[in-house]
Length: 311
Image 1 (cartoon, helix red, strand yellow):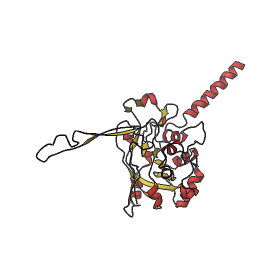
Image 2: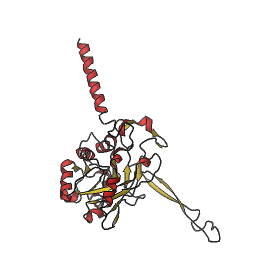
Image 3: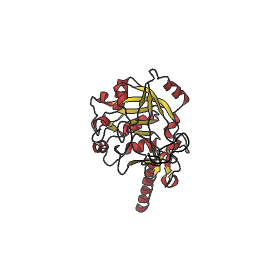
Image 4: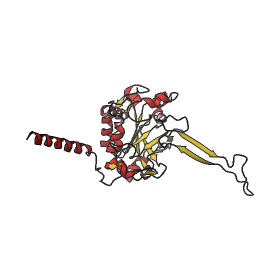
C-alpha cells in the first residue's frame, strides 16, 4: 500500500510538472501559429499610427554597426570590399565603368537587432512549443526565421526611464516591472495598447559609449513581471538602448535571460536591442510612427536592423 501511495504521488508530481512545462503553448493565436505578437498588427493600427506624423521628422533608431560595435562573445563583424576595381582593375566600355562589391562576414546578432522567436527557448522548445530538433538546421531555421516577420508599421511608444526614475543613466540591475512601467506611462500621458512597439530610454548606451565591456556586462532593463505585463497588453515588440533589453544582473541569479524566455518563447513578443533612443528622448517624443522592414535572410535567428521613427 505504501509503495502504491508513493507511486501515485510520484505520478501526480510528474503530471503537475508536465502541465507546468506546457502552460505556455499552444499559442492563443493557434497551435500552428509562427507569427506571435505580430498578429496584433492591423491596418487600423497602422493608419492611426501614420496619423501621428505632424512634423515629418525622421529618426534612425539603428546604430552604425562595425568591427568595434559592442557585442556578446563570440560574435564579431567583418566587412570585405572586393578589390577587382580598386584603382588597378579593368575599366569596361566606352563609358569607362568601374565598380566595387562587398562581402559581409558577421553574426546577425550585432548592433541594433531584432530577436526572432527562434532565438531563446525553454528546454529546447521555442514559441508555440516548437521543438529544436524539428526547426533548427545547420543552414537556418525551418520555422520562426526572421524572414517571416511581417513589416511592422505601428505606433511606437517611448518610456523615458531617466525622467521617470530621476537617474541618467539608470543604474545597472534596475528592473522595470509593472509599477515602474505604469509610472513612466503616466508621466508621458500615454496608455500602452494592443499593437504598440514599446521602447525604453535608459541613457545607458550613451553613458557607456567609451566602455564596451561595461555596456555588455551589466545594464538596467525590463524585469520578468514587466515582460508579462507588457505582453498581456498585446504589444508587438519591446526594445531599449541596452544590449540585452532585460536587467543585468538578473533579478534572480539562477534565472538568466528569463525576460527573453518570457517574451519570445511564452508570448511571441519580439525583442529589439541596442536601439538608439537618445534623439527621441532629447526631443521629448512619447509616441510616433514606428516602421521596420527587416532584411529577409532565409532562416535567420536574429537580424541587424535600422528601425525608423517618424513624428
